Length: 484
Image (cartoon, rainbow, N blue to C red; front, side, top):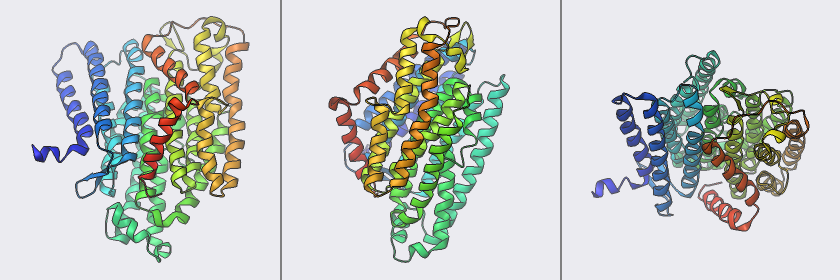
């Protein structure tokens, strides 16, 4: 019993891994595949809630396992709750769509569970080998999810593009990890940090090049410019609930891993990695602002929007301070809620059995379904960063640490990109409220309505100290457990 308890820090991951195996057996030995798929999905959500409860009951102190390769601290717990919440909400969004399109197979929730285990391992990784194991466990499941609609050419193409570019990014990350190992003699983040903090580290070209390749591999995972090319095609081609999942939990995990790597392994090379973060942040903000303007497909628009929001989040990271890391965590939480709420609205865009993805098809929605139009409009305002909605405060929390750190150009570019990006968000609002109405959408399902309602309440209530205060305090505690 004492041996089992020694693995307590990894109980959430162990629970989800065992749940995935159990649900796989349950699905494989059941005859009614469609009904069983929904049942397995609800069980998967229950197991994720159970894992979340375990995380909240864990002690606040830092714990580690496997020779410090797996660490559980305040930062890991905060990120894991975001990952679990994003995955469970994405699962909830999936049920109606999958049932209507004949995709309600038991493999779907199992793949999401396995991906979730990988993501949770990523944010607890304190070693390059643990980092890679978590990253690949997440990625392999995501490749299959992207192409799960095998009868659809776009879905198969999305899965293939994601796989090829994902394999390329993994190769770059592995090459960087091998260079870091070669020039430090260890895969442990703590040992790498000791070498990186030495006086001669900045002149260690091999270590710096290894860091750059690591950052390139991670930039692929967060779809930051110039490694964003897979994002619009995969977002558009994958089934809409899968796109919602991609935009939510994996983004949280990849950003968490980036924070962990830079804060845990390379605190002594700030000047070197800050230059890379500077560039990809500015490039992501500007491309996300300009490239989305001409999009007519709302899923492609959300892809470019996500690229822009990654750039905004990186502004906080570029400051290299605990306040900046805190801002990134607050930004990620708010972005997660806004994205899930928006995709709940997108999944509600349905006429008969046909999903509508074109923005022009939203014309006059306010006259046919005022509540849906109002919810989507508020989410668009929040994504644009209009006060007093949550999206505005998210940008304040990342821009202010940058200003305090003297990174004025970065903050100025961020504000300009926000103003430009507001155009395509407000264009959607204009189409919904002022254009001639078209045929009505089908009524909103309870699952989608629940996610939309929760997101709407959150973006309004975040400014209240009763909600925003505890979130900011938890993000501060999480950020302080990093070395930034």
